Image (cartoon, rainbow over all chains, first blue to last red; front, side, top):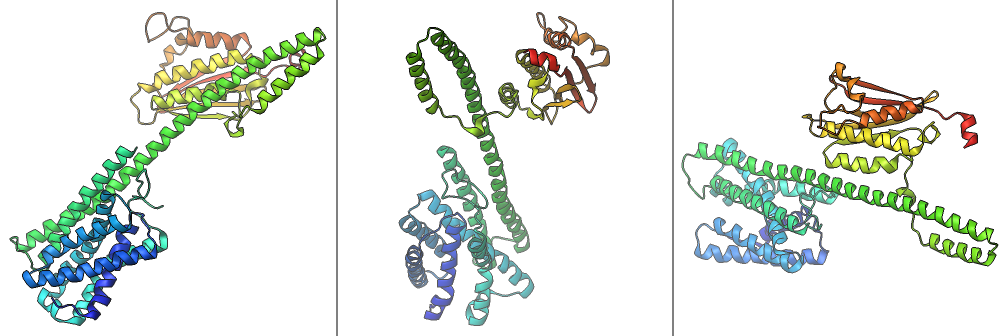
Length: 166
Length: 290
């Protein structure tokens, strides 16, 4: 997979921003802008490196990439968000579950109603960008809910670990 | 608390891992990365599995809302216990003050003016250090007996409501006797309701003036009393609980009738059982004499 500057800026960076903000926000963890920036910087760099490295040696990188990035995100949460390991794992998984939910639903719709194949999606930048934002739609909605209504799913910041709205 | 919190985190972690795996498989399947057999069947299974996984997270969220409510209930129980302690302290203080008054009276009789002054100063200092929170004081004199009874009922899983609209102090009966009546009636209601197989276990205590009578009612949603037993249960020694019992209701009836009051029992199917005491208001001449 080739990574252009445009792709990394408009797709990877936006996706990572949403992933980090939603992953932490839905678990009631809010950080300073600097810490968000640090996590994003390392995570985006990590994603680009992983994509390039895996692309060199493995034909199909999607399988391994998600796991490695999920682990990387756990490490970054632990380092910059100052939370315990379990909370870091839950935050990382929460973000990924919401992201993959969008991917799963959209892929089902695309393959059944539009009969789109993966190679077609990857070849066309136009289709790729539309599908990219469709994939991220649940993340986008969740980010808006967290920002606007302070929506939380699990309150990891609280000692009693409460659920629901704050 | 921290241990249960940690357990909750593990449950959420497991559910998220499950959802993560299923979604990954679903996405890979959609991208034709893996081939796991008949496409249509697998897609249906994956769709159901993902749906169930997401719903299980929502369910867990709802379950823990209930757990939070239970926690609040426990806190309220502790608060009740604290109020009970406060009531005890108030009673002790009341007793102490009677002693203090007697001491002061004695000193005045012996014309020991300086000692009285010093004694009152000491008392004043003691009072200033006594913390008495306004919101912890009872609104009715009956609260001092209703609060422990409420705790007892709640421990037996019974909902306990009290509605004391008027203060009971103006009736033609001593507080000691009134407390005895209320205590016996509520204890009977708890005994009858706690073992009764019913979804809504409820005890209600109402108190208000109706004309020249104070109506004190204790209702329970327990088993009904057969009509032929309504007069029998008020006789001494009648009990379904065994020997040497069955004097509670007889004492209640005697105490009420001694003070020109009356006791009525209403027991009907789909309603429950209600003991209604009609206590006459204290006559003005008697009040003045007191």
